[in-house]
Image (cartoon, rainbow, N blue to C red; front, top):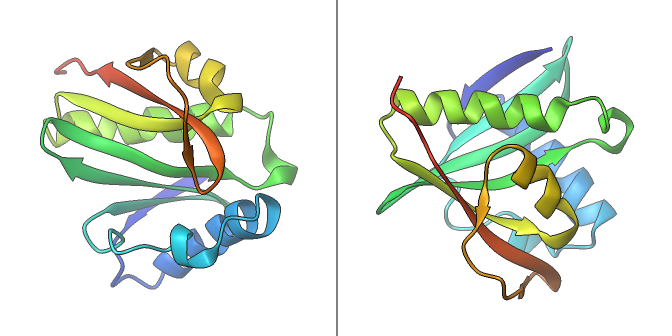
Length: 145
C-alpha cells in the first residue's frame, strides 16, 4: 500500500474522486453535487493505492483552529483490513507537520466508534444530517512531534 497526497491540479486527484464516487455516490446514494463541492481546491487530497489501484481516499482542509478531515472512504472490498486507520494516521502525521493543533471531523454515526478508537472525542452528543446521513462532530487534539 502506498499514499499519494495531491491537489486538484494533480492527475491523481481523479483517483481520489473515483473512490469517493464509488463509496459515497454509488454505495451511499449521496448526490454527486454534494460529494464534489466548492472546497475541493482548498484541500489536500489523500489517495491510498494497492499497487496502481486506488482503494481509499480522504481530504484534509485547513480551518480556523486546525484542519477538518473529510470524505474518508475505503472501497468495500478493502474494508476491515485496518486501511481506514492507516489513512487516518497518515493524515494526522501530515497535520502535525503542518502544525495544525487539532483535527475536526463529522463522522457518520456508524463510524463513530472507529474514530473513538483513534483518539477522537465527541464534541456534540447531538446528531445532525449531512447528505441525509446521521453524523456527529468529533475532534482530536494533536501532539507536536
